[in-house]
Image (cartoon, rainbow, N blue to C red; front, side, top):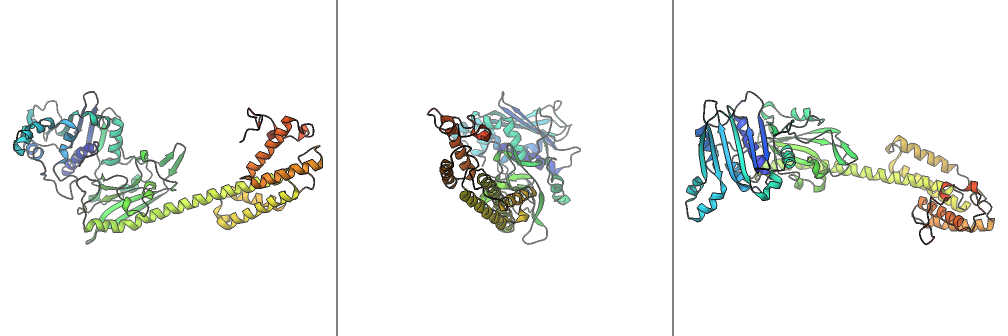
Length: 504
């Protein structure tokens, strides 16, 4: 049931939330987590109502028996409090409900159980032999509290359970803590719920940290070191119950520009499921409701289950099957698929825009090559016709309204220049080179313009030929110094060890 050691924190904070929900506290419900790597020990202390001695014996000794209400309380199977025994040798529960009471401590020792069961002891007797019940003076303890201490954490689990950063991130992502106020829709999330459905939150602090842990939604989603996606729209999701008035689930989606998959380390991607404000499953909980699972990695949102008949399974990675779950899935599926359609539409629009910008740059490069003076009049005119055809293809493909002002001006300017292009009858870049030799150059350069993968690359190759010719002295005296461009210099096109120009 507890394959992830960090799920231990979920279970103990879940119990704290259930305890707080049963009684009104004079102040805010608070939990302090103390992680001690040196002692390999964890303490989780809450200021909840606590338990009297009788209540502690009745609730903390039995296994698989719970007085919690199925569908109302967050826990109900009566085994979660022992999760620490999967990762440590000792788990203690220390509590009291009133300042006039003594403090009760119940300690489970997991390392004694294999020895006792191997001797043929009855299970109940073996379990009781692993438990120590103590009564402590209350002078050093709060008036009412509940504390879990997980001692002698197994070494194979210390790297996770005693890692403060991992604990902080897990609690913020999974447990019932408030949403960061920097999230632009934080108030909108709070306004979704009726008074009797408002999610309970705990103030959870790591010992030594000045600020409580928050759910990690922020102003935007960081997709890379230099690229963010801002939230642009808040969508409310309400799923009605199958057979009566009221909601089965209430949720939200924070739409963005959907620039791609959100990095996992952001800890916000995916439409998450929550019950009692505690996450059920992870980012992939609703993957199966998307036509393409990958689009769930582009999304940010939560679905809070408020129908008590939709029950988390034992591992809390999804829900028990039944008609009420099917109703949730049937009504949630078209909503999630509409999000996927939106992701695909945004992606298609971006791809079209990238292709348009690439085509626009190609048009400008064609014009630059046609007017460079390196080509024959015929070849230059051919490049201009090709560029004008590409202008029309852009206008036909995306239309003027789909270009932003800057790129629309670029396109209009390029078309105007191309339409007014006139070819020169004489070579423009060859200085004193005899016309017959210049024509040979132009034919070679025309071939390069045709065969090169792009006009910018063709011009680069042409200028490399000029630079090389100048360096080897073949026509060094024929090219006038004032006709050389920066690209004709030796620094622009260095030679390799063989004397040939270095390719770009």
